[in-house]
Length: 591
Image (tube, rainbow, N blue to C red; front, top):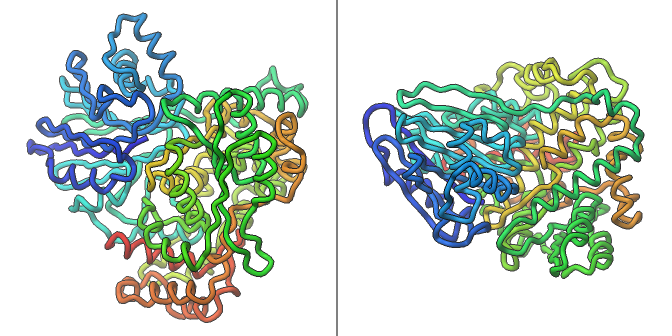
């Protein structure tokens, strides 16, 4: 897990080492262990390294294979790299390092860009071919690792974070009205290729982008699981599916133990992280460190789930760490640095929870497994059951998930941002796409391939990498996701959600953790904005830069400032925090 940056020129000029260094320096936290720079003619690559696999200098990046004429900068982890290495060695390839970076290089040489289809892992990489000058950018199937792009005069830049590209300059920082519409209506999810600023785009998940020396580009999507049951699986019952889920998840967890450093677990106390903890404990004799975070309660809103995480820690004899956060002493002072760590504005309250948790966890371990993705992949959210027998398509999904309809959006947006209903158009396109027949399957596909990527997964990547901590997400193992896509929706969404996953979990973890009310990562102070938090939010929204931007209608904003707790979104978020978070992010990055 690292940070990469690059520049490719199409105008005959050399790539700028200075701009590459600026981008790399903006990502020091993603790779605090080492740095590297490669510039040749119109191509430049920079890298910040977090040493997880092959800790030696032989695995430094950018990595150059002079014999093959290839250079790579890469961020991620290929969990099956040892198997691929053995296959490549049998084909005659010689290796000078013991890590996964060189395996990608050799695999690219043998199989071309189709090599991505052989990788089990999370990755974003850039490979330069010396002979042709072609650059290939690729992103993993579920978009766990980021890749941002910016067209600049005479060339293209790319990086693991949007702020790194902004630091290098020459980029339009105008607010993209389409992205603003998504942000306000789609729970701050801005689907690729858009970002909140016009000058930066992001490579979609499961995509390979090939850039020729003259600037011509072509994209290929290499993975799209079908949401339908195979003929040979149609007679399976829920216990049969649970057998398959548990077997696949065991493999996913085992894959994510591949590291040359210890691997811990972010243990929330929910069924997902509890199951991961149990499966790691089954497969490893080494002491397992687990970590939980909690905040003080506000009214009836409980701020921690320690009572559940403690059950799991005791059951599996983990070395458990409870991290208690006082909102006044730690949460509020840490908000500015948490927001600055976001590659894009993310409104979810638990960003700060993951940020503060990661700070403490990084003092103990460099790699953790985390439970993100289970709700999307196995149907755990409350908006899924109403869609089981629904045939109206995106309208009911929008009613259950959207933060506001288009009329409410127009009332909230400033004059320059009042545009068409881009969210509705996007949802229609997503639901019309082939590969899923039922409304519920279309919704699960959308949430797995879009919402998950640009909310929970991005949140965990950004907040952990802010402290040089690598997070691995076994529920996003592509083999497991493909399996889950084939399971009948009733077995996923039924019995309150994640039915088949809970049946699998009963074989590993106590029922008291499984049969509890569904919990979320609670940060009450950002849902019920009061006292010092309200003062902070007011300062952000009344800042001169915010007023000049005019993103929000002032009457709408003033009503939220006057009574924040009266305006909560359908998913339980604060409308005021949604506005303040966007402005705070723009101010943090001088946009």
